[in-house]
Image 1 (cartoon, one colour):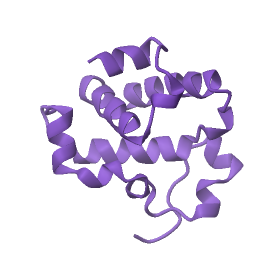
Image 2 (cartoon, helix red, strand yellow; image 1 turned 90 degrees about the vertical axis):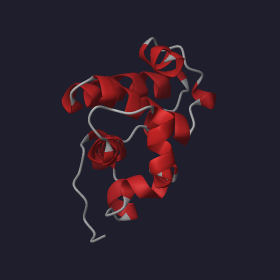
Image 3 (spheres, helix red, strand yellow; image 1 turned 180 degrees about the vertical axis):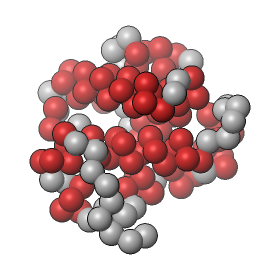
Image 4 (cartoon, one colour; image 1 turned 45 degrees about the horizontal axis):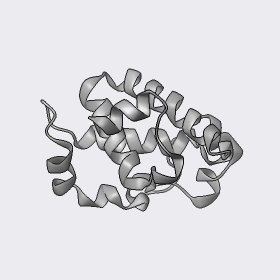
Length: 123
């Protein structure tokens, strides 16, 4: 799990951490930790990654919470290989899947950057 190890040791190049890497890292954390711990760990290291990139404003607690919740909801127990999981759920590789139910204004609000907000739209 070099991706996860690099993420947890703050060694990832921010430029290479695309949406697929976000999803894979979240899955790997959720497969090895309780949700609350995975969320805290993911947030901590994602904030460090955005800081190293000089893009702290890109961190969004609401998007992060929605993404991890969506991934966790679809996981089986015991967790399967991340590639197999993504083959079953290819829509997770589309960023819009993880934020359904949110208006653009709510998702992009200053509050959403700091506090995981609940959806405000019907799906």
